[in-house]
Length: 227
Image (cartoon, rainbow, N blue to C red; front, side):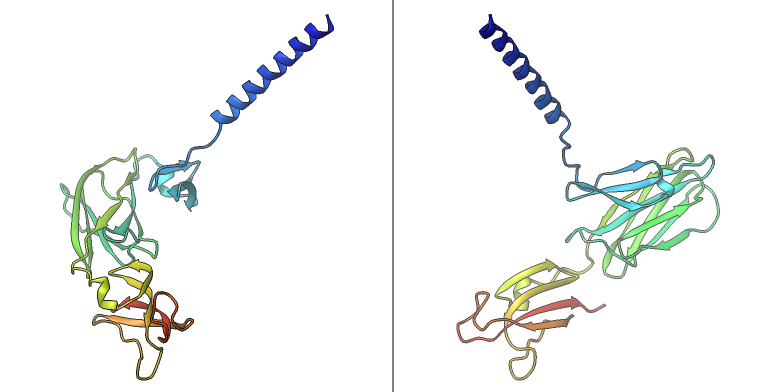
């Protein structure tokens, strides 16, 4: 009788444990899709590296008001996927006379408009280093409009080989690149970047490191595109 009671108790315990495990697995949060966005209350969140990150508190995108329109988005490089600051963004209703509303993207590539007349509209994007782009769409007062775009570089990026790096640390061409080179920060073997780029930093490393020749000075340099 005692053995039977123990077996029943053990069976119930195992069943209860299986239920807890199943519930735990069900509640594991899956990583969000890169670039996705959502509103939590009035706060705007964007998915970065599989996690939801707060982008803007009290975002107009999350607070639709009757009769007021909102447009927002992010502009990125089609080549490096990095945000582009200083992009001129213009928006206008195509069926009503009037002037464009114009703004510039911030350091995160973000822009927004408030109060564009609803209906058929266009949004155009322009930057000296990128090909212009125009998007035609429909804007309603009931639903905020999110328009994220990627711009193609106007000029073909310079080949990485032109920088003569033995090892590349970060490649965000055409904006900037960081790498190791067989050179010095000054003097006869001073590192000189290719035309169109300036050296903004230079640090010495161990001689012969980072795939350099055994007797070569090694420097870590960053080259930025000259605007």
